[in-house]
Length: 214
Length: 100
Image (cartoon, rainbow over all chains, first blue to last red; front, side, top):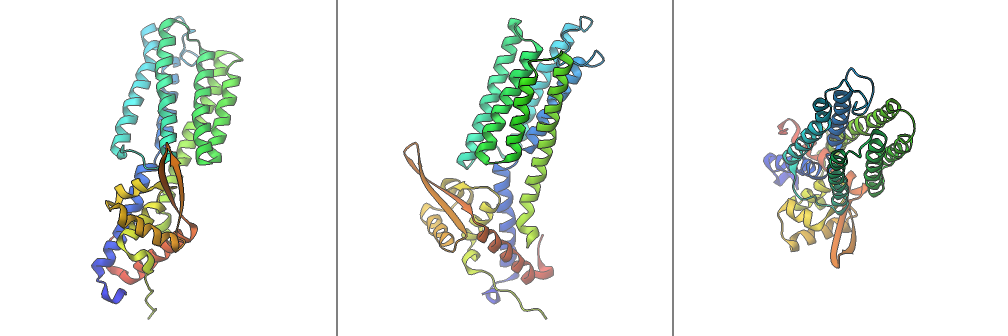
């Protein structure tokens, strides 16, 4: 068969394989960066809110902190992260996801994100937000999203992340604000930064698998 | 001089090759997603998917979602190997003429 084919035809076939693999990956499989981005965002918010004044999720226990500065750390960081996530997501190809499982996972994360973005500002405005409760709710919700995603994908690493979040949620109900912050930061590091990096490495390897095996 | 490899005729067709390559990059995909990505018609895509399925390169799961029929395709290990061998054969045939 190949005697009848020109080099150009064969090159077209090769380019087709590469472009289609890349297309599939772009549409459905690039999520590691989101975990990494939000891991950094949470860490920046905590660092900004409590910098130089002891370890606390938002440093509100310290009278000397200007209220505007403390109050701005979380809203500014979270709004910037949402904008950044949307911008990068659209740039990477924000078209309708093609598989039922991907749509299910995206729906879970959007729902959890919307719930958090509505709940915490409302709790803050009503004066009913306190550190232990905040960390317990955030970690529990992230545990739900990771657990559901991990079960849909049958991905043990993500289910392990859910277990870490749920454990952090239970621990956050006890101990001092500083201890709660340490637990929160540890969970962020493991389940957002480490897991996000791991997912990005897997995505990169998988996209090259067919070509590099050949 | 090494013998030139044969290209697998089952996946040599452009649409079949495109579908197999798309599925190599995802866990699984619905018929409508594959149709959108390849820009093919229902009839043509269905026929090519059937050929790949008969060769054991694809597995299909047919189900109903909200009372609508849904076909979900995924590449098999055999299909992944066939695609890898096909790319290897292409590389050998092209040699230094490969455009990468």
